[in-house]
Length: 427
Picture 1 (cartoon, rainbow, N blue to C red):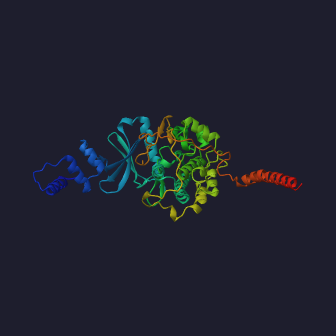
Picture 2 (cartoon, rainbow, N blue to C red):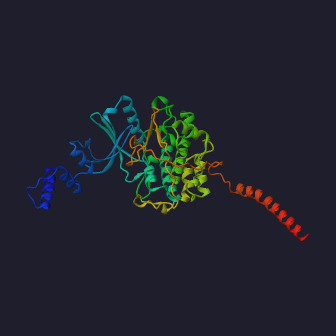
């Protein structure tokens, strides 16, 4: 923004008012500069509060995306190349030696990966005491916010989004990396329906020495999407752990509900170990049993019985994904079925490496950050009871057999009674 830009906006406002001596307020001048696309609304708001620093190294901050326990994420533009990016900032107030070490590890982890379905890292550096990571800016919103605003996805949309995520995670796995925090909030959905996996801050490499991983031996991730083996022994995580979490994410995408709603992180962990979720068709009757089988195979408790690779996940989902999965402008047609209400208890709670519990923000989508703001509490009516059978296991033939066992003897009894009554009348 130059003085010429300010003078031009001032002159335009005076001309519109037909009064050259009219006093132009800071708010009116700021709004005109935003309308002229000289500055962004975020920059305008900050300028009105007296904030004038928007540069971070060679980047100019243009908007705020989200805040989390490990930093803040901003939309920015390179001052020479003009490329829009997302910048994750580790605030100076939280720049402890341990935090800086973890942040540097995240930077190095993300720099090793380059795939169209993973958020790419472009740059990193520090501006004074402020350390930052620059990644590609992904237009759209994360899957969690998309579901909350538009309702559950249909089968084609869910299969497409999760398939894209599986493609990115398959590349990560082949690079020796386990994400460890796969969840809807870490899957960014673009307007054309393409999805990218973000937030590799908790990721770990296979066969890595514990001394090189500050989170080794600790349960890290989000309570609603933790695999049973992550809970039993955090040292035993493998590719199948991400597959379980992605299965929970698919369950959420198609039903609008986490597999085990309500309760504390400890109770959620116990249910991941011991219980099976409500059958997805309780929330979305349009789901076929064949599709439910895929979710069930991804969410097997025993990792040896689970789908073993993301390649297989892609193969299983590919027939369900189609052009109808595209989400134009992120405005989808709702299912004719009313999505189930949100539980009273806090869902989507994050367990970080320190054992803290966080709830993700329901506000603006975050790009590679764990949010701690915007907590919500909503009222939920009683939920339907869980099905006695595990999700994805066919029970139609069992129901038919049970019905016949009841109906045939009953019909015989009625027939005998009628015959006896007719015999009495004739006699």
